Image (tube, rainbow, N blue to C red; front, side):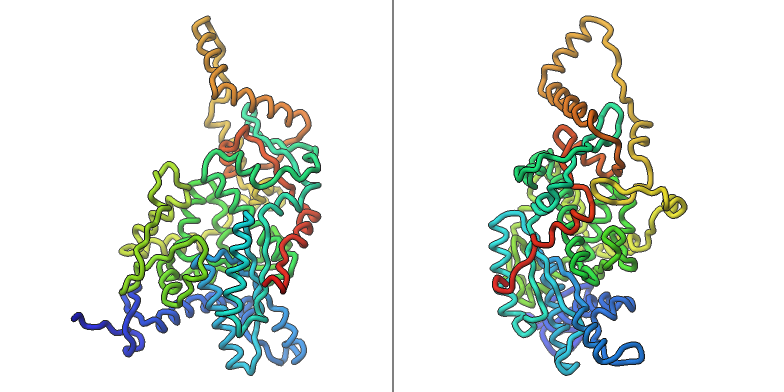
Amino acid sequence: MAEQLICQRCRKEPATVVSRKERFSNDCFRKFVSQKQRKQMMSDPYFQDIFKVMYQDRFRTSKEADLQNMQSTVLVPLSFGSSSLVMLDVLNDTLTEQKTTQRGKTGFQVDLIICYQTTEEKEAFKELAHNIINTRYASNKEKFKFHLIDLDSFFSSSKDCLRVVALDARGATAIKANYSVEPSNSYNLKDLLNQCTDRTTREDILSFIRRHLIKKFASQHEQRAIMWGHSMTKLADETISLIVKGRGSEIAASMDCSKFDEDYNSSFKNLFPMKDILLSEIDAFCLVAKLDEFLYDYKPQDTLLIQKVQIINDTKYSTLVKNMTVNEIARKYFDDIEGDYSNVISTVVKTANKLAEPQSLLIEKERSKKCVLCFSNIYTNGFKWLSDITINEGVPIEDDAEREIFNEWKNSTIGNKTEGYNRATELVTAHSCDVPVCYGCIIIFNRIKERRLTWPTKSKSELEGVLDECVLTDDES
């Protein structure tokens, strides 16, 4: 019989997890992951003021301290994947410890926002939320508040602000129509996704819409911070994917935890408390802490467990590479090297953290523009760059043979699509003006049918429109 391995931390309990060449027992491993998250939660004075229990001092009275403890609210996007669940579990443990050591007081409250796309998802998320709050987190139930938000509210809350945006292939310029879309309830997220020609584009649009609605909610409800449950592995694949998609200039802003989010009224900061934790470590925590019963559409890895609990049939990577999204390809790469070369993942994230916004914007801040679609800063003119490296003018037809070939192309499927796109562009161009679009969104336009889509403008009314769309009542939770 093989000798039982002992935890290298406590040197008492049997080891169940091996991570970073060290053996852990269940409790020691949970503490190891928890400490890494809490370190980020206390990374600067702003976040310390959110999570610490405040008492009377020379800066505040007892009443003011109690009020600050009540009003310190963080927003946690909850997908019921392993990362967001583990982050929530550590928050719950933190609240429990504060109650025990601080005479029943806690320093913060947690709002949880759950985005859904279908009715089936909504019902499944409601059931999971009900189960987890009434069982695992029952002792802190009053500190958690759940909210459901329909991704379709991206459009339904902006009916008066929808515009048609099209890419003019002939002039390589983006065009925004000056007229509103017909005031009907027919246009929705499904219509938009049906216009996408590949999975990468669909996932990019869904990711943007989800992030936008979460940040809108945080701005409207006076949240002090958004806690994103991105693991080190997730941040690494996001970094590489942004570069591949032509959005490398967005890396610095997407990783910044020091500044207020200027695009959403500068009312909150973004925090990535799990940036020092690998996805395999999060999955192992999920399994040893028995959180896997609350997962939705996700299978955690058991690669770090000494005693394997399951054989994962991960069909996500069994498809052909050409059918995978850019993020999935990057994730597969990092998953493959994580065992022996996890330092590569750490290096990517550390490098991304050191990046700053391009100097051109810092020098000419007043002339900077925002993309009409993703609202990111535009540092260079993507259309001009593409025009300089692309031949946009066709060669004239010179003889009957060339005309015959042209007519065959014109009557083909591709030719019909091109003609339809040109007609759609002319319709939009006749009632519109140029608008700024970043290089990354230009790439997306080229993967949209007819290279035109309906999109809400960012305005105060659009920002306020979602208020009644995403509240989960106390009875439901």
